[in-house]
Length: 586
Image (cartoon, rainbow, N blue to C red):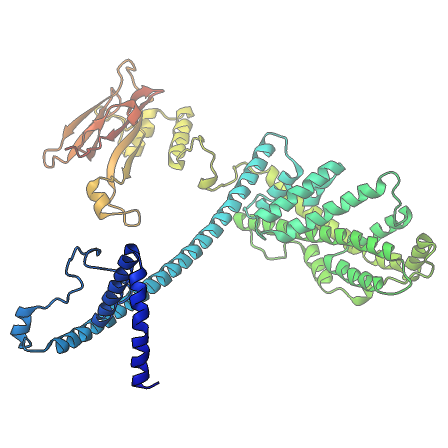
């Protein structure tokens, strides 16, 4: 379209606009002018470089309270100083637009940096959260271990209380047996499965649950021991089920007794060889599967008993060895010759001694066929070969038990226990004090010498005028830490402060006072050369001399709640005291 056509079209629209303006109402006219004004202001803002955020601001409506917001600000003083006051208006507007664009770009960069910092902060917080979760998980696992340890201690404590009160359960005796293995000389004389004798089915089921509890709280410790006991308990429960009314046994009673005679007295290695043979038998065709599976279950129980019996014999041998060491007996010969020889024989069993299990030929009569199998495989004859080994094992166990029983019956001294296992409230006696008391009692019962002769002989003096008795006495000094403000600031638990004397205890024996109506006395006087120390004197009547001690010179606590004691009872003068603790007060 040419310029003339555009001009012609513009002239054509002018009459239409004039007609519309003449027909519009005052409200429409006001609205048209307002829209036109807004368009003009928007165009002006776009030319000034304003973005959409500030596009809605006007001279009357803006958060800055500026009535000249749409008018460009001209800093005349600055322009004159920079020599730019002669620039034209267009050049000034162009320069202002460039500055505005630079400011916008810088603002965008600032926003990007802020977003980057926020993103990095979120990543750091996520990393810290992940590390905190890992720490909490590790702490939670540690708490679980402590909880299991606590439950184990509580279970052992309950067992100990029930045993002491005479109402022990089978699980208490079994737990005591395994815990006694860790101690020095507290080994049970019987195998652990002996405690299952005479239990009813309900008791066995309860014991089965208790064994599961111990397996879970011990976290794999003594797993083989509890697993063998669990197998034996399951076998005993199955026996109750087999003997119940209306239950058909898979093995005849006669064959069952023969199986018992085969399994009895075998070592774990021999039973393991039989287990492999029977396991192989179950995979063959044309055999009575139920019979062989029942045989396997019985064999598992006998293997568990054999392992426990072997473990028990090993514990007895270790105990006897320790007893020999305690008594200083040299082990010139083996502890148990029969045991050592038998052990060598059982460690290398010949393959010919392992019984072979023959295949059944008649599935309709499993009882008769099994008897025929044992006759063909010569199991009774093989069993006769092991009678001597069984007898040796029984003799070995009886020998060990007899030796330990003889030692226990002749023991006149109590068993040495650790200090941590002493029950609270038990009065402990110092060995030196106990020895001195014993010597004094022995001397008092002896009539060959007088007390004067005995005591003066200890002094290296001859009895005579002016030589008093030296009394028996026991004393101790109590030392400890004092956590005052200074020590709390400069020391901690790992690096404690030096110990200080906190008190004394004196026990002085006066068994031979002539005038017992006058009790011994003590006196305290400071040292002349050093005021930090004092002289504590104990004075009694004849025939005893005055005795003195050099102690720390500090103020005493005379309250009985603080441990003060001063008494003369049963010919013993006791003086216990503690020093006062000085506390800082403002």
